Length: 493
Image (cartoon, rainbow, N blue to C red):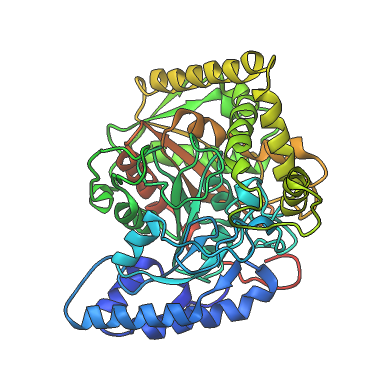
């Protein structure tokens, strides 16, 4: 554990320092830039550090505060997963295919953060095109877990989770298609939330699977998560899947009182394959919720066992469609070896995409091909409907559902790269929420073998407030979220 420092603070604590003029946004930004310099040699969380932009934005924030302006994120440094478009700033998606690509526009989520006065420190490493559970699929190197540099930080938003855990930024944004916010949050011991599908605009998010992708925050605390979510949420006419649903101030719904709250526990999430230390920590957290006044009820989600296979038909099918645009013609990587147009297409995609992306493109193309579309893709969509209906029925008996976030703690780097199925199982408990489009959060709930364990809370569509309330009450009853790693080159925290 490292001693308390500026970069250990929560967003709420930084807000107090900035509002009391005990600290300028520019000095705070320099502190984070120094921290990045100190630990990036071990972690490799960042792909791009935007030092000049950050200092300029910090000066702007100081000017706004000097004029009396206030706001929960004004002057607070943050960073973005490198699939959120940032005008004029390289946005690679962790892929050789987009090396050097500088978008001509900003993603809506980033624009909202900028309008709120947040300061951009840089862009974060990720599995290529968000396809992976360990951040080992990036074309630009592997990110390490701050708690043990010999283990993975999770994925695909591993850089985002690791950066928050290591104090390289106050908060980050990632994306969650099958667990890519919640799973790395669990493995790195931070808070990570996937909002309801449609709650946050996907405009400017480089697509993986368009019916599943959702942008979400990584923070140190649930309170910070609520504040960030309040800023980035809301209807956006630039995104046809953005829901015209009112956005509450999520920070105002936080409460320590869980009396009357029904917490559902599905037996299907406590199965063989869950590490004993993980199950023990999660069971203890459920008992803590009971002690806080919640009613614990049994619920059933019988199609959970089919979610993983269903996901790996639907998501690759959408990958096959979405990634067809990368042909080397208008932007991105283009081979110099093509003999004709078709050969240029083939060589560009072969050289520009990594192995996991190619695997999923092939899986998706097969599932959508003549003769297999009805047998695989259509059937998978029917199972997806069943999963959604089962969640609806479960929420008739409870207000939130609690599960482990991940069946394991962080696993050793390289241990699953040659076994795709083993890697896919890392998202076993997070995928169903994406299939159903419901909100979910992971909060720290203990340690196993010295590595963090995450507790997952799932809620009804657009009831982020209910999920945050329970998560906040649990967090306030323990101190897991206050633990800090000190990244070192040697394995072990």
